[in-house]
Length: 208
Image (cartoon, rainbow, N blue to C red; front, side, top):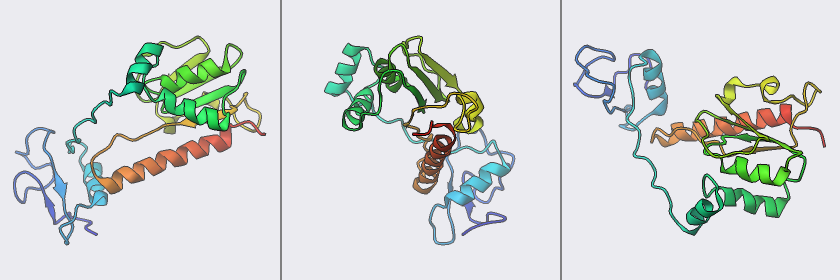
């Protein structure tokens, strides 16, 4: 593992230290190698912590899949085809019923909010959380919080199992990190989001 003075950092001008004059804009693409010539995500993390202006150019965006479910979602007014993924899970597990309170983590673009709201009806409530703005058309029973899930606790979301608020009957999560293209780092971020979903489930789900 390469640590400390980053002797094997190679980017842009050969041998230039991090933050050296002449590096240019923040669009520089960098690669960090250890002594075995392998990219090491921990070194990248340390480099970014020491100089916040250093950036990794992200991979190109994923192509949108325009299959039969994509066109069906457009016809039926869903924000995305992922609504049918939740519908399939709901049919198998019977997760959602009228009157339930539902928390949707990573709710953008809003298709799971739309489907959940249909299932819980006017007597239920659906709360969504995402860093991105949700622009989909949503019924009045849906509340969206544009925020970081790590910054919100039970009090902001709707209570916990200790009686401070009403809590939730179901917590859904389709959270995914902004990918860097570095497999180990992206996997670690995904795992941390899953852990956060579990933490909130333990604190916010109603008993039963």
